[in-house]
Image (cartoon, rainbow, N blue to C red; front, side, top):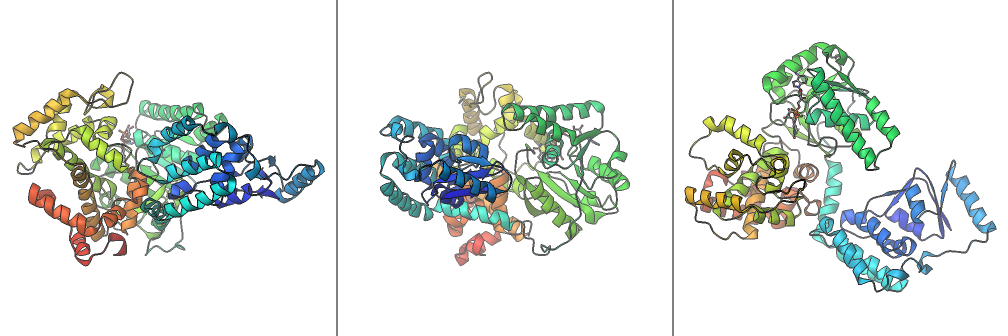
Length: 609
Ligand SMILES: NC(=O)c1ccc[n+]([C@@H]2O[C@H](COP(=O)([O-])OP(=O)(O)OC[C@H]3O[C@@H](n4cnc5c(N)ncnc54)[C@H](O)[C@@H]3O)[C@@H](O)[C@H]2O)c1
């Protein structure tokens, strides 16, 4: 039995192929066992056959890593026996005939022992693998179950290993982590469905794009288009700014080439698709223009009227604004129906999330076009409404606020960061702040200081750090201190001193704060805001909010997103905690959203609403 692989053989596809005697594949194919990404393991013999074929280490990489391997690499590993060209069926038949002619044995993977034998009884090897995947595996049973099953392939006879594989698989199927991951997988696709913009809505053709501003965001956005093979024009105000922006893009690509993730030739192709200009007349033919200049309304208005004047009538005009009103920009043009928000996340060439902001007058075909365009450039596009911070950043607000308040009440940055990290986020709010730079927020707060009401609780600790020049990693200190050239946060007694002094100044008696309280104080404001967003119709469905948080903010997919998580905890439990916090902290920031109150009373979740 010879398997002929024409495309991507993932999961069951590869497992069937592994049950054959030999495998051939087109060079364009790929193989993989991605089940771990759904909180499962490759349960049709994948964990028992692959290690016997490639050894436990390479098998663990594929089974726990879950990423596909291109056919040529699979051939190197010994998963594919022959790379064939041209017509697959004819080539596969010829390959099979050759095997017969050569008297090749009927090779059953279950009988191969030489790759697993050396690892037998090698506890250190498996301990090493456990450590290797510890960060990725945090909080989840599936990666460890996969490792256990790979180990069974080394230690147990085939039949026994298969039996165990089935048992482990059944256990994982019932795990809440797997339920969350499968949910996250399906709802990401659901986000494409927009009730009043049916699938057959005509779309505008997008053959070229233009970006205004070659800064942090503009450069990254331009790369997305070049990566998808769409020519893109980048407009700046000065030659100097343009050169700087194009330089960053080149260095970005060069480092990808250096890491072996892109060929030199592909880099050249992509760079050739990016054209820098200084003159608006050069944008006349662009099908879509994305404005990513400074975050100032007057400037954006000016840019939109210029664009309206030079761009062809069918062109879509988009803004990457994080906080400003798309409708105000649209009002500057004679084509408000063609104006829309495309809110990318930083780094824009890496982060998958794209919030597509629907303005009051945005045409349906523009929405359909931009949702499809998002997909084409490799993003997860989610439709949101016009409101302060849109969906993601709007919800982030309360999370950061409570983290700071907790410091005043008794916690230290490392306590909070540990709880949030253990929950599954890539890092806690303070490590995150140090990475992003604390000076940006400080500047914004200073600008707004005069208009801040005095009777609203405000935490001054971050400002105090900035006054000392502690801007985070880039200055060697922030919420933590950093050793020269290193990124690992180190607890700093100086910060603790500032925090403790601030508690005293503000009259807070420092107390021991439990991990449960830290988690609830940080996450429940976010859920409460999510409920308001749903009530206001700023997101179409609770699952869209989850998709935003998983793809834009590193919310652990195995927890399903904040709204799914709320349902798991129970809306009543979340509501009760918020009411309790309102009693303890005052109602200022703890008004339960009416939707949350209603669901709690009805005993319902956000997803069954
Ligand atoms: N940085 C982020 O994390 C982030 C995330 C999402 C959205 N945004 C939004 O993206 C936009 C750009 O942010 P950024 O971080 O890239 O800023 P940035 O300062 O890095 O880049 C802005 C660029 O725009 C150029 N520019 C200014 N006026 C211009 C004009 N009239 N015409 C052409 N170019 C002009 C500047 O020279 C600069 O290179 C802002 O609206 C911001 O709110 C930023």
